Image 1 (tube, rainbow, N blue to C red):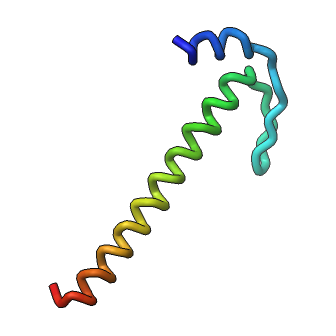
Image 2: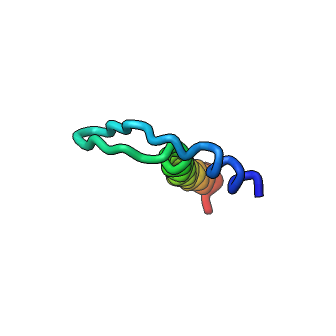
Length: 63
């Protein structure tokens, strides 16, 4: 419900420049895309780190 209210209140268009692309999006959509991208990046980095630590743990304990 809060997300719907936020999106309805932030419909103003903003210019977004990322790498070589330039586009105009509603502010709420631009923020939603940024949040999803950050979440995906955090999951990938976290998974890689957990995998690395598990390998180090197994190597140190002879399993």
